[in-house]
Image (cartoon, rainbow, N blue to C red; front, side):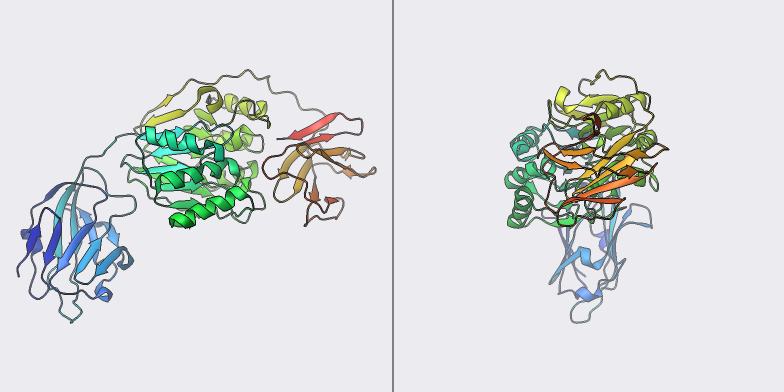
Length: 491
């Protein structure tokens, strides 16, 4: 058999009519890119159906156990040519590999009698550090992850007004291509800026929560994905995003069926060696508690949920994470009271050093997998010591801006008279008044409902109105007793 090696084009010519001994014909290739696409050319057309599982694979040189196996759908067949694409996360840098192609058949039924092999060494890593950038986008989130193999991931992009800032930041960092955009959930302060990113930079894929929304921002986000024909996938819990052989990126939570946008958030754990990052989106306290049940959530760096709102950062969850660093992403002088004193106090009591985009601007964390360095000034606000609990405590646990359900809980061990108490939607200045004889039992919750799906089933479900009350782009709630004293609030 005659074999020619076109070393300049890295295309191999392989004959299938007679025995093959390719290993002896090719010299080892050096400094091969970790995302190299190998092209193997035969002297006749190849029958794609002859490619079975485990027939094309890499091993580490000198080993026999496949390091990377290519199923048939990962191999591109075009007549007499095979294109073998790298694994999604790329190969390891500075590693010796051997490529195997086991005997295939031509369309005329001729079998390649010997396997094809090729030895090569991948190029050194472009970087030895994982870099995570918490970009200052005001009241929103945007996180850039630069992996050691040169790939990039952008988690959220702030609101639409932040898009230009995010694009500028990426370009200054020398980034013109984003390998994966992650939209944690469809709120405007997370996906709005992604529209500019997708318009002005190359985006190779988008990972979405699957939670739909009705805002113009969400529709525009979907439109630009369609216009650019960007591959679009839905996140699945417990899946791994294969970005870099040296870094694990795992989806710990996503819930497209949730009635609340925040509760649908994609939560990621990024691990390089012994250093972990928890990226929480706007996950709520109940989600955090559920995440901590099956998963190890311990992490050195915590991107605090929901800009430091007390809808997240459950005490038990913070204890499980035990963060050394807490990153708070929010806008200065925002209308939501973010971050709340309670969350700041909770993080400080857990021993976390705090960093704030509102105070420090952009925050960059670099790690080699053993140690890490935070490039920003710490944030050390004064907060009052944790107050003693009052004898009777009524809390607004959650306001579902989409679901139009407000959850109010009596955490005391005695019932509470809520007769003529008032629940206020701050943005719309609309008020619901509890029935004059209403009592909330000890350690029970009541759900105040509104909108098309409002429910009247006292004492657990109270109907406010069939109209929509809560502003999806941001709202807060206050609860007043019958004397007008503020008893609880939610932001």
